[in-house]
Image 1 (cartoon, one colour):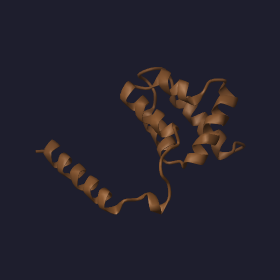
Image 2 (cartoon, one colour):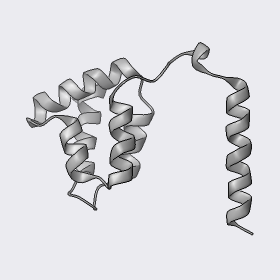
Image 3 (cartoon, helix red, strand yellow):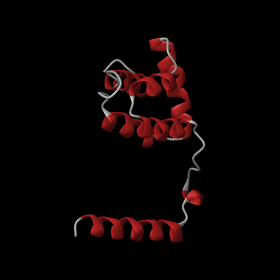
Image 4 (cartoon, helix red, strand yellow):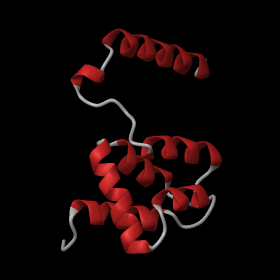
Amino acid sequence: MLLTPVQYDARCLRQAMKGIGSSDDDVIGEILCARPNGYLERLKETYEERYGNPLTEDIENNCRREFERFMLAILCCAREEGLDAIDEDQATQDAQELFEVTLFCYE
């Protein structure tokens, strides 16, 4: 590969956005949700340099409304990071709620 990781992610995002309703949400979500804030800032810059459009604009124009709002929130780069950002009690409560909802869906 002749691309840096940021350039490669920018290319993958561009390829994943094929038009409204046909974007590859899995690829977009995997890239944006799994990267730290500083990396996302560099990714937004790299994407715009390479493709001439802001990444946020392409997300708005190519993703379903609910998914678009979630991805745009991620791209604000305001998530708390590091071990201090983890609230173990809240994580346990969230996991329990998800478990209960999943049980309800399959009953």
